[in-house]
Length: 147
Image 1 (cartoon, rainbow, N blue to C red):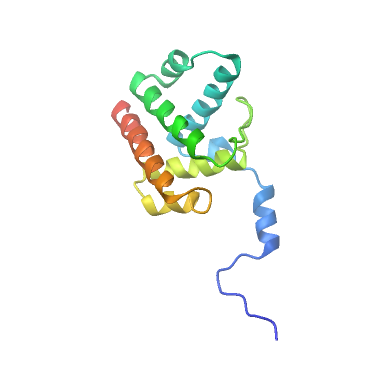
Image 2: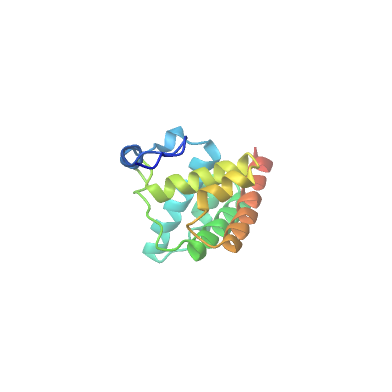
C-alpha cells in the first residue's frame, strides 16, 4: 500500500518547475530590489579591489542606507554556507540566492520574523538567522527614514 502524501505537500515535478522559473527584480518590493542591486554593486567593487561605500551612498541617496546595506551584506557573507550566487548587475532575473535574499528583506520590511526565518531555515544555524534579522531590520528602518 502506497503511503498517502500529506495535503499541501509539493510534488517533485512542481519543485522542478519552480526552480526553473527565475523571478525578476521588477517583481520584487522596491526595498528588496534596491538591496539586490546593492549586493551586485558591492560584488563588482570588491572584485575590482575598490571600496563601494561612496558609489553605494550616491546610488541609494543616503549614507545611512549604504552603511546598513553594507552591514547586512557582511552578515550575509559570513552566514551564507557558500559563496552567494549573484547575477550580473544588468540582469533582470534573480539567481536562486538573490530570490531568497529578496524574500528575506521583504519579510523584514513587513516585520514578519517567521517568514524571515522560513526563508533561511535549513540553510544556516538559527543564531546566524537572528543576527541577520537584526541587520535587516536596521536596513529597512534606515530605508523607511529616508522615504
